[in-house]
Length: 248
Image (cartoon, rainbow, N blue to C red):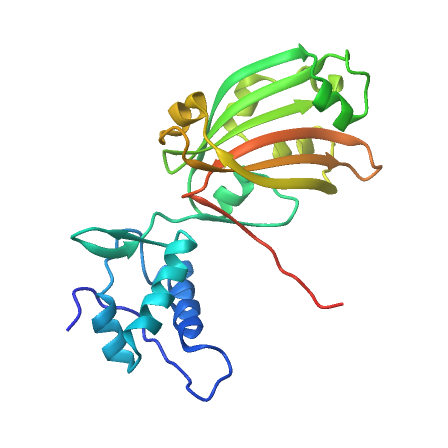
């Protein structure tokens, strides 16, 4: 009946959890587990609905939830398929390099700029130094499996002025800092969304005006000293941030 086999999906009509959400959660788990791979085409929503004994609107909503999350894409005249794997980044103090490496997505880095003495008032305020203080400025383009994912800007204290371009190209920033005896402990982050500029679009290989996830981060060590200020943008079609919330 199906063009592509799909993982077994079970729905519980006695559960208070909406039926569409049950389907969404199981398909998302199958994608995360690798049971469904990027490019796999799903049966159409009529076939899926009939196989589960659900209404077409219920199935449509379940699939639309996954499209909204960037896990599925709809292609006119072709159907619905699993999108390129997103980097699901949990709100923990890790670097993008570590996240990609842990996910087996082969991180590589192109160092676009390295200036050991650049003043920046916003970064200086975040780091807690005089606005005229020369900071170490780094601009990098991070790839996942050869695909551009993030444009990253970092400012480091003057003590890190000897960091090399080769180090930054071959390893993640937090790994470099740890090798220098600096231990990232806590960070303050601000996450927003905006449209890609012409230069960002060119580097990230997307259209100008396409949505980006933007994040500013100020990271501190065990003593509460600022170790870096970052201002990064990520392709919204390949990056997600996961947050676990608790009831107090």
